[in-house]
Every structure is written in C-alpha cells, then in structure tokens.
Amino acid sequence: MSINYKNIALFAVVAALLIITGFMQSWNVALGLLNLGLISAIMALGVNLQWGYAGLFNVGIMGFVALGGLATVLVSMPPVNEAWSAGGFRVITALALGIAVIFATVLAFKRMTPGLARTGVIIGLLVIGFFIYRAVLDPGVAAIEAVSPAATGYLGGLGLPILLAWPVGGLFAAAAAWAIGKTALGLRSDYLAIATLGIAEIVIAVLKNEDWLARGVKNVVGLPRPVPYEIDLQQSASFVARAESWGFDPVTASTLFVKLSYAGLFLAVLLVLIWMSEKALNSPWGRMMRAIRDNEVAAEAMGKDVTRRHLQIFILGAAVCGLAGAMITTLDGQLTPGTYQPLRFTFLIWVMVIVGGSGNNWGSVLGGFLIWFFWIQVEPIGTWLMVLATSGMSEGSAVKEHLMDSVAHMRLLTMGVILLLVLRFSPRGLIPEK
Image (cartoon, rainbow, N blue to C red; front, side, top):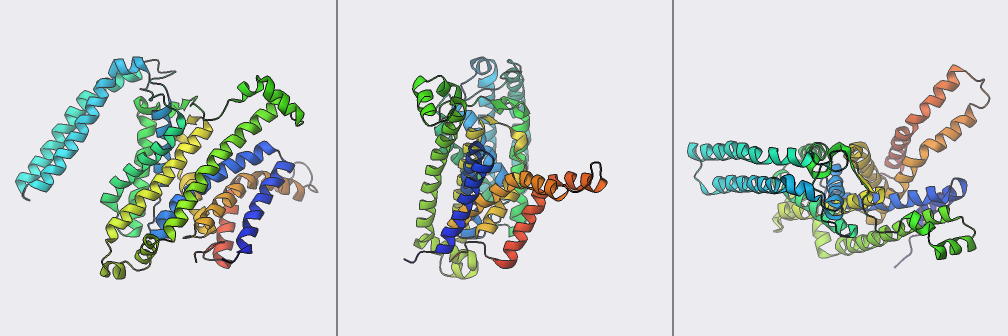
C-alpha cells in the first residue's frame, strides 16, 4: 500500500495550526479547539455516510444533534421525585394514549377497505384521540412545571452515568431518522431537504417549549461529567505536587488535564467510528451503496432494494450525529436548546464534508478539524490583521471605524472564500473519494 504524503501533509498542517495556537494564545484554547474539532469530525462522518455513500441530502442535522443532547438529560440527570409525584404518571399515560391512537390509526388505514368509512374512522380516531390526549396531558404538565420552576420544573432523568447517554443519543436520533425515512425518503432530493429541515425545526420547537421534558429555554445546567472536576483536582495534594513538578500552577494544570481527558474520550470514539466506516466503505455493502448513489435505476435492475438501503444509511448517519450531539452537550455541561442553530449544526457541517472530500471518511475528518479551526480563529486573527492594517490611520477615522466594525463579518466571509477556493481548485474536496 502506497503512502499518500499529501494527506499526511494536510493533517500535519491542522496539527501545526493547533500547536501554533497553543504557543501564540494558550494551550487551553488549543485543547478547546481540538475537542470541538473531534466532535465536528464525528458529525461530518455522520453526514458523509448519508451524502457521500448514498447521495441523501439531509439538512436536518440540527434536529438529530439536539436529540443527542436531550439524551444526556434524560439519562444522566437525577429524577425530580416531587415532579413525578405531581404529574409524572399522567404524562406517561398521555404519551401511551398518543402512541395507541397513532397505532390504531395506522391499523385502520391498512386493514380497512378504502372509502368513506375508512376516512371517517381515521378522522374520528385522530380528533377524539387528540382531545383525550390533551385532557390527560395538560393537567400533568401544569403540575410538573409548577414544582420549583426556578430550579427544576421538569421530570429529570434516570441518574445513570453520562457516558451511557452517548449511545442512547445515537438511538434517539436513529429512531427519529427511521420515522422520517419511512415518510420522506421516497421524495426527490430537494423535497427531502425541505422535509428534514422542517422536522429538525419541529424537534427544536418541542425542546424549547416543553418545559416538563428538559426545562425548555430555561436550560438544564450542571450535567454530570465523565472526567474529574477542576476544583477536585486542585484540592488533591498529589495532583498539585505533580503539576508543580512540571512547572504548572494547579489551576492551569487542572484545566488542561480535564480537557485532555475529554480529548482522549472523543478521540477513542472517533477512531472506532472511522475504523467501522472504512470497513463498511470497502466492503460489498459499501460498493453496493455507491452503486445505488451513482445510478439508482441500474442498481434496482440488479435486484437491490434501493429504498430499504437508503433508509438503512439514513439511520446510521443520523445515529452518528446523535452520538456527537450527546458528546457536545456533555462537554458543555448543559443543555441549551436556543443554541441549536442551523448555521452551526447544518451549514457548517456541510461545509466540512464538501471541503474535506465527500465520500472519503478521512476527508470528512480533515474538513471537521480545518473548518472548525477557522470558524473559531478567523475573528481574533481578523482583528489582529485589521489592527495592523489600520495602524497608520488616525484615531476617530471613519474608514478605520468601519473596517474594525467589519471584523465581526469575517467569519462568514472566510467560510465562503474557503468553500469557493476548494470548489475551484479541488472540486472533489481536499481528500477526494477514490
């Protein structure tokens, strides 16, 4: 197997950028970039599974990431016993009734003969079921949200280790992807994009408005951590002694240790995922998926179930995005539904995949690191460059003030420039698909 020195050089450039950041700014900043770069690479892998392997245009990434974040709350936070006593049973009963109504409606649609009778039964089930559902749900929700609304006002979670929430986040996203795929994967690519974006917005709207579930826009803070707290490390005599022997003060050493611990966890997940992705890509299944992507008609003529395979890869890619969503919420230590913006969790991930190289797993990883680095660092670098460029202008100059005010827009400008340059000089990405 020949060594691809170009690809090694590209990853070396990313590593050099992080090292330069460590020396020029601080190692805390560099490790923060590394951690979020690792998570971004995982998200890009998930999107690459859907687009690079199967050509599925999904712009609902934000919804799957949010479901991963929700999993961290439902798994790791302790249950609020007062809320469960006040209305937990009513809410669970209402949800069970809702599922039963949907199941009965689907059963009626499948079993009854098409006609006015079936239409009437379906409408009756949905209308009556809705009113019964709300009659049971609303009092329970009101009772739950009235329990210490400033501190809790929700049901809480299961109180389990937060690392268990990561695969659960993937399962939540996979379940949502199955429901979306069963209804939307038969649509043309542009309609699929609209459907996935709309469903993602629905997920975010539910998270923001259903306070009983995860406190809505009041946020859930204080999520458990899989790594030690800085204050605990600073109070450990052995850790302080070790830090001082290396020439670090305890505060800096504890922060670096925590970020390195997160980096180790995220790197382990990324390595496992990229190993599995490479194995899948180079297997008969991977060759079949690429054949379906390139020519659905020919693949179907060879006996391949295109719709089923599209659903399969859609679920897998969404699960990876849900896993990444649980990881980023764990790193933040809080669930903040207001931060789930399409610009960050959809547009940016797509730029990572396109710049890195659609259809190439290593390209997606490279794009994740590179684009995230520039997304964060462009503004401070732009400020420094603008200060340097306007250093000869007098204070109070209108031109200088305008240029300094324009620094805030350099982030979006830079993303556009990077995307245009890559599409012009390397249209298949920095590490293109073989």
